[in-house]
Length: 68
Length: 290
Image 1 (cartoon, one colour):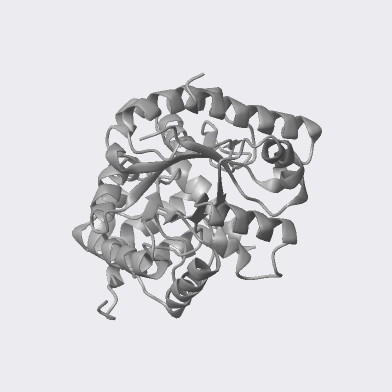
Image 2 (tube, chains in turn blue, brown):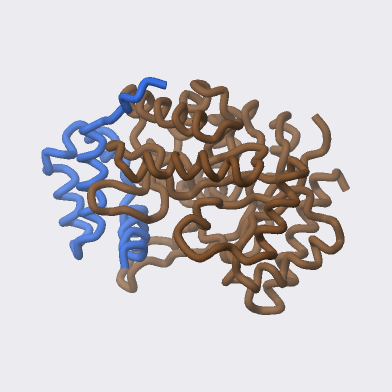
């Protein structure tokens, strides 16, 4: 198999920043503002527009729990 | 295709061993699934586990289910490369009928563990996932598949997951591990009929089914939202899943195995053990058309 692995820098930036946002003690409003304005999220605005605030709350708890 | 095999997800905890023992003793466990990467980091497995893994492997009745590869992380890391190397070694140590992993990502940046999260479907992410799945298939040396996720950030994750899985699996002629409780979580959380959700999935590729229980997440005390259903594997199988199982078995002609999952440390009480055994026997009766 070709050893050159497939990477997606935009995706990596998106995932890293998303997890950081979930870990920070922010309000929902602060998280939403970051999702809409942080340059790392620009390529995924259509995807982010579908985010459900309830699920954001769940994700933040899941991620914080796994990081403790 | 004959009657699917019915089995358990093997857990290292004593409460699981106590709950499952009557099922093994009665010869009712046709197949065993093992999350092999759980056994890579720590002490050697207890002797009773090694014996079961060897026995079921020798009989062609052992399924592998990875939990920590992080298929759809944007960056390929040394951790991924090491994981595949360990998988190759694992596949020589135990004989797996097939190996599955989770759709989604769980590592990025400095965050190195967690539950799998969904990924936006784009041509680039599909291409990345196909590459990763090919590498997984090469390391595994047996058929590989992916499990659908419960968690979704929003509607895109719910309605794109089926087609995303099909495009990934097509590249390796892989199989779908359809987790019915994960489907149930999305159906409940997004108020979407499960029959409409499952119609998006490549049912012709379903080779394995998972059933489990879960829990309700109420959020912060100040939360104004309805509780969310989560796939925490720590409770009885919801009644709705038995009807789903009956329906899916008629619609997915290639199912080979149906697995009950429950975390060992949620089986401490006698009541939970009895319920676990009852859930298992109910699944088995449905699969056997009784």
